[in-house]
Length: 103
Image (cartoon, rainbow, N blue to C red):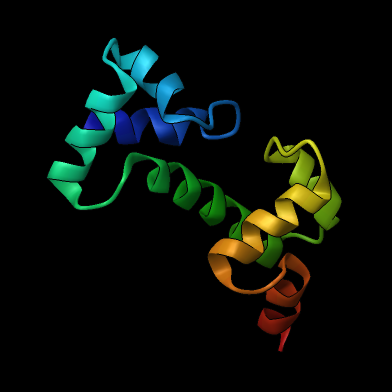
């Protein structure tokens, strides 16, 4: 578990699938998913999403970098994909999140 979390922390921008992390750990994606779920109760993919969201929130709150640029910095091919990902997990758009925290 610790090794997986360390890898996610180091590679969340360029590795987005459980299979990519499983390959780094020399196990199958299925084995990694089951092991993480047994230990933590959360699925392995949620840790990748959580790490991306933590970074996205930080960039939105503490920088004035354009949202499209944040999307590209985080490895999204399109700002719309980033917006959809963020809204799915946070419940609001990146812009609404940024504006809501400015008050």
